[in-house]
Length: 316
Image (tube, rainbow, N blue to C red; front, side):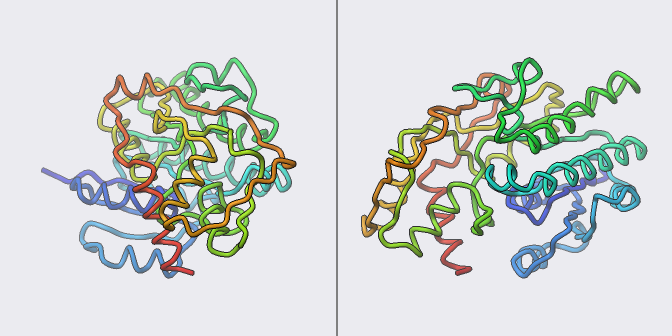
C-alpha cells in the first residue's frame, strides 16, 4: 500500500521535532519545512532515512512557496508559529500578527488548491478570553485577553479559515488543536521564551533565584511529545471540532519551581518577590472533549522537566 505523504510546517520547532519522528515511526513519508535550519535541526534530521524524509527550508509568508511545499501532499500538519512571551507579543505585535496571518492563510489556501486529504491547524491557548477554565466552544463568545490581543486574534483567524472553507466549498477536512503551555526539548531559552525555559535558564545563571509574586498562580503545562500525539489523533480520528490539548492537571508556579529545585537536589536559593504581580490566578484547559476522543497525556511534569534541564545543559 502506498505510504501517505505528510507536510509538517514549523518542523524545526519544538512540537515539530517530535511530530516528525512520530510520523516517520507510523510509516508516513514526511516533508518537513521551516524558515529556520540550525545545527540542532541538522543533527536531528540528518539521521532520518532520505527515502522517506526530506527537509525544505522555506518562507511560508510567500504564497508561491506554500504551493511548492504542498505539492504531492496528502496531509498537512500546520505547526508553524511565532514563538514568544506574552510581554514581547504585546510590545512588538507586528512581529507576530502579520506573519501569522500570512503563513496561515497562504498554507491553508495552498492546501485547498492542491486538494489535500486533511489539514490540522495548531492554534493556541491565546485564543481564549481570561477565565479560570477554558472550554472549546466559548472562544467565539468572547475576545482574547488584552495581553494576547494580536497573537490571539491571528490564531483565531487561522481557525476561522476552516469554517470559511466548509461554508464556501463544502470541505470538512480541517482539525483545530489548542495546546496549553507547551514545553520540552528544543524550547526557546532566550529572553523571548516562555515560563519553563526561563525558569530553567535562570536557575543556572542567577543566585539567588528571584521569582516574581508568591507562586500561587495555577497553569496547565503539556509536553510537546503529548501535543504531537494529540495532533496525530485529530487526523487519525478525523476530528473536526476544536480540541484542547493540556495535561488536565493544574500546577502552581510554586509547585513548578519546587519540582525544578528537586531536580537540582535542593541546591538552589529561591526567593519570592511578592512586590511583583502574580498574573491571573488560574488558567486551565477543560479536557473533557479531548478525553472523550481518547487523548491522555503520557509525560508527567517531573519527567518532562528533567528532559528540559538535560537539554539546556547540553546546549549551554
